[in-house]
Structure formats: C-alpha cells, structure tokens
Length: 623
Image (cartoon, rainbow, N blue to C red; front, side, top):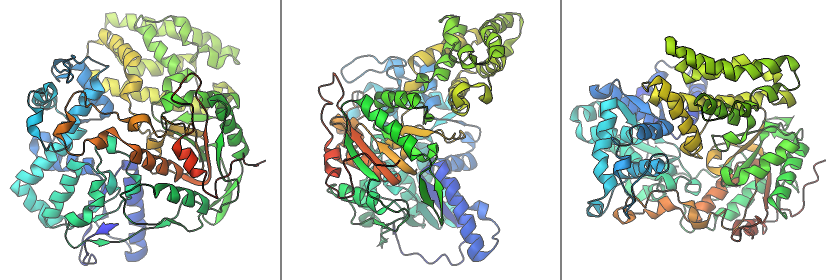
C-alpha cells in the first residue's frame, strides 16, 4: 500500500471519501466491510451511502450523468453490446471504412474486436508520436464513431472515461464542486489502472484530495488491456510525500502454496520489495502440492477427474471450524479454455463430476447451449428440427411423458412465428420465444437426468444473457430479419464476442467444479486448484499471448506499447496469480500435445516449481 501521510480522518464525512475498486463484486464486499467496521467502532453513522465505493467507470458515469446535462439520458454499452453495435452500424461506425496497415479492408464479425480494441487504445492511451498516426484509416474513422455514439445516445466504456477526464480538466464549475467535496481517494488493485484511469486519479489529487493506493505489482495481469505496471512501480516518485506500507501477510493459503508462489515470482526483475508470509490459514501437509507429467492431455484430464472425486469430502479449515470440500471448492485454471478445456470436460463427464465453464468460453460445447443455438438456426430456416434433441427430447428420454411435448415444441415455435404475419409481433421477441420453447418442452431442473439440472439451467441462463445483449442493440430491427441476424451472431460471433475475461457473477453458482481462464480467477480462491497444460509455448504463451490490434494502428506512436503484446514476465505474473488462488491443494501438470511439434515439452514454469521442497512428484494418496 502506498499513500501520502493522512490527517487521520478527523472531521471527515462519508461524502468526502471516494473508494475505487476493480469490479462491482469487489465494491459490494468493500461496502459490507466498511459498514461492519463503522458499526463496530463508531455505532450508527448517518450518510454512509453518500460515500462512493465502486469502479472508476461507475464514478465517471455518475459524474457525467449528474453534472453534464447532455449525458443524463445516455445508455451504456458493455463490451459485448459495443461489438453488436459496431457490427450493426458497420459503415457508420467506421469498421468497414477502415483497413489494416497493409491496406486490407476490415470486415464485419471477423475484424470487429480488433477494430474496437484500436479505438480503445486511441482513446485510453496517450500517443507520444501523434504524427505517426497521420493518415491512419482507423484514426480517421474515430470522429465518426464518436458522433454515432452521440446520435444513438450511447456511451461505451472508453468514452465514459474520455468524456469524464475532459470534464475534470476543462469544467471549472465541476472542479470547484469536487474540490469542496472530495478529500480522500482510495484505489484498490492500483496495479491494473491504465493511463486514462490514472488521469482520473491524478485530476482528483490535483483538486486537493489525498491519495491512498493498494495493489500488488506481482499481480499485474491486464497489460494486454492497457494496464501499466509502471503506475505502481513509480507511484512514489510521481506523488509528493509518499509513505509506503508493505502488506505481506497472506490470509488465504497454506505455507506450502505461499512458498512455491513466493520463490517463483522472485524471478521478475523489476518489482517492489516484499516477502509474502503465510499466517496459517490452512495447514500444509506433504502431498498437498504436486507437479506431475502425463503421456497425453487425456491421461492428464482423467487424473484431474479422479482427484476431484477423491478430494470431495476431504476436511479443510474454514475460520475456526472444519468442513468437507464440495465440487464448487475446486477450480481448473487454464491459459486458454477454448484450446485446452475439451479433454478436461470429457473426463469430468465420464467421471460424472458436475462442472461449469465460467464466462462464454466453450458454452456451445454443452448439449443444452448448442441445442438452444440450433433452435434459433431452425427458426431462421438454417437448421433441421432433428438437431434440437440436446435440449428437448434427449433431456427427457428417461421420462416418456415429456418426450412428446419436446418433439412438438420446435414446430409450435415455428407456427408462432408464422402467426406474427397477422399481427402477433410479440413472438418476434427472442427472449420470449426462448422461454416459451423451454415451457413447451416442460423442462425443469428436476426433469434433467444425471443430476445435471442445476448446471443445465446455469448454462441456459448464460445463453439467455446472449439473447439480452443482442436484443439491447437490435430491438429496432425489422422483426422478421431479427432471427436471421441473431442466427448470424450465434454462428459467427457469439463465442468470440465474449472475451475470456468476461465474468458471469450475476448467475447463481451451482455446486460444480469451475473451469476458467487464469484471468477470470483473479480475486477468487478455492481449497483446491488445478493448473494443467503447463506446456512450453502454451504457458507461458508463445509470444506472450498478445491479443492486440497493432496490425491496424502503429505501435511506434505509443510509449510502452509492448505491454499490450505481453511477454514472459507478464506470463510469470499470470502463473503467480493462478498458484495463489489455491488455499490448500495445488495440482500442476503437463502432457505433450499429439501432432503439435511446438507443444511437446514441459513449460519452464513447470520445471521451476519442481525445485521447491513443497512440490511432490507423485500423485497424492487422498483415499
């Protein structure tokens, strides 16, 4: 934690404090802790709700809507809605008017995310050589994209920050009001702020607010989105009279997990000095941490499934008590779910271990989501009715009374669409049609065989989210064409539109093993964590796993553009985050990938952890 000397808060009111968190979930947890501590120390305090605790985006949006009349009625596009918005207005947004640096025209669907990524960099980063952007096609389309947002009454995430910084720097009245109100600004996960977010923090400091930032440079894993680890590394030299407080106690993991992670991250060259120490939150026992080789990804996956079964019910500490591990206490963390998740899902299915895939990654590899997608292909006259079995009859094959309704449901949905020709336009609501289909099938959690009811509806809920995102942009589309457009979205874009960091915290989590990317695991913890596929050129990812659009805009125009592309130190921080998600059990493994000549050897990370005395090279004898 780094902060200037504080005045102790004497006379400070809740409205004088602004606390920035990285996610809405973190904000909810922080609010709960603040209320609890205040009640314990000060009793009931009037006005606690006037303290802002939330994301920087949320603060900037609130500022725009309360201080700038133009934005009062604007709606916000999330990342997926922004993608749909650009695709729908592909010419006006500038997508199909732009080209790569080599002159290749951009196309809908395939180039949308990179186009949006370049727009975000142009608005959120600061070019050091703007002359190198002259004549660039994406740069030329940026004013038109901004105008399109204003014409439609939208703000995307980047424009929220861009417009807020503009007001913070140029609106004298606003600056005066904020200077009178805000005295303290607290920033959590400071290592993940990008240049424009740092500009918000710096402007509030320039108005007289004291700044307290909390962060861990070893957990900077979003540089590919623009986060700049130099913000926290150089904080002491950029702000006056800074006091540094080291928070080194680990309240999450066992001594073994802490030691393995601590020794591993020391290899990062430039980092703040600190030494993580375990405080006995979980007892370390030999065999809790393993690093194992396997002959194939399938063998590796079967080992994970067997270990999950063996771990279920094993006692672990929770506060002052002990309890048995459940399915949801286990997580499989992958560098890429799309690439490496297939064998693991197959092995868990074979072992009858329930699992959920966090985010939209590989959603359509589940029977229910793929059948739901086939429903909309069928309604758009692009698929055969027989392909709907995964959601309909096959899910009721053990209940004869359900089979006939499931067989009739697709035809009923098609008839409902045809009836719209005589005025029943309500059936063109995609969400209503989806729900009606489930009702017609008589699908309920208790009717799904194999005990998969909770997981099935979890996945259908995520599919429903895709419908909502699509309809939020296409609600004015021609009703008949909407089905064709949605089918196109599902076929070409749905999985790619949801980034691997997409969170689905809004869904109630079933008791099931989590499969997710390491990025998605940030801030979470489990008693048991698996990190498989520690294969050279995969983790660490070959070339750092860069996912940025430098084929659209020149990287030489920006300082430290290399951070977007990633490198071995970024991958090292990512592995460190993965390892420190484990509270007690940490199982690492690798297996050569058949037919892939660059994925045949163990990762250097795998070899490094073998040096730890806490890491065993034999399977644990759990039962």
